[in-house]
Length: 549
Image (tube, rainbow, N blue to C red; front, side, top):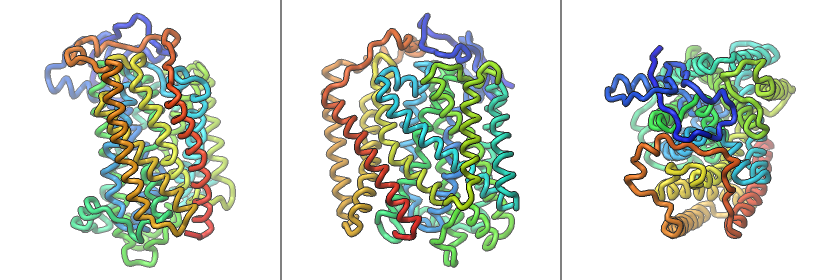
């Protein structure tokens, strides 16, 4: 185990809610003492520090390649071939930009995402954001146990055996009372994620076709409401709202402070690359495995895909896919459930740390256990449409993501919260582009569902033009706002030592930001739009389930 040493905070008082969130960093691969002042001039010292800090970024990203992710990517390859590969590299900057903002929020504030939203914007908007999270997370946990059922079902294990055992092991693994032990468990699952490499080899992929899929945007069968729904599902499973809540709280729980932000950024970038590569390999595997077969375009569920791989590529391929699915289900269930438990702890002010044992944080672990057991019970309901539930949940995550990103953007421009760590103008511009594109995609889904005969290509061009206009407008407003409020920090200030020791004061000492009428109207409009979008999504999902495309 490596041991390094770390620095403290310039504020005598911080907003940290749980005393267990203060102390040495006790990572799976090393320890950093709270009073460490080492400058780390050598690469070996920097590597030891990175090993101690690595974890939250890798876990949140690989955890996002969960059961729903594996099923969605497998369906992409089986039904659309390589035609949707181009979507994945576009998601890397989305992942990195969103999660980098979360990294700063966690390290600088010392509190979770749910608590920040609740305290800075009030209970109404807190309920809006966190309420969506709880609903989406619970449905996502259900899909993780669907994955467990299908994966072990491939080996002939009854879901009445596999699902309860998985639930019990998941609770036991999390409620060990040791953050380090939990993180080591998670990193084992991260390593197991690399089983997709030998899996793709079995499909005998053609490199030239893969490169073409990455660089030439296309959609097999053309752009229509079904393909748009599926693209949104890919976005939703790769960039999910729960990631924001999980990584911020996990960074706080690991006791990472501003001094170590750059190391956590590296952790996050590595995680995003691993996630996208793994997703691409799953798409490639199923695309080549089912090319010119009777199963092409006939995705049923991940379990059926495993059997199909066994039939066309051999027993080893089917076994590997089932193991990849099981691994994804476990790490996904662990991360998503924990993000929900963290959020409950933030909102209701209860002890919520993996450093605490079962007796010391009963409510925290009770919430975790109830979520796990309830989700597992739903999966055991006979004749439930498991494949439809999985795809719909991923699409729902894509629809709700703009809302989560808007709150993230507001917090990262809150000077009282982040001080010298607030967003730069260029970062706000990129985030605005991301939100605009996500909303435009869901608008296309709504329009094509309500008006099935609409010309989707013209609609996409119109949405693209609107998006460009929105971005330019945001740029103009952003520049004017920066100049007017004089928020831009002088270059020498951003590089000062102060920045790396600055922590957010207790939230009770901060005045809430005042929203203009225009901002309030925009937020209420966004909320109303999301309600309509979710209803439209449900209608489309029901149509697909009934066989009407």
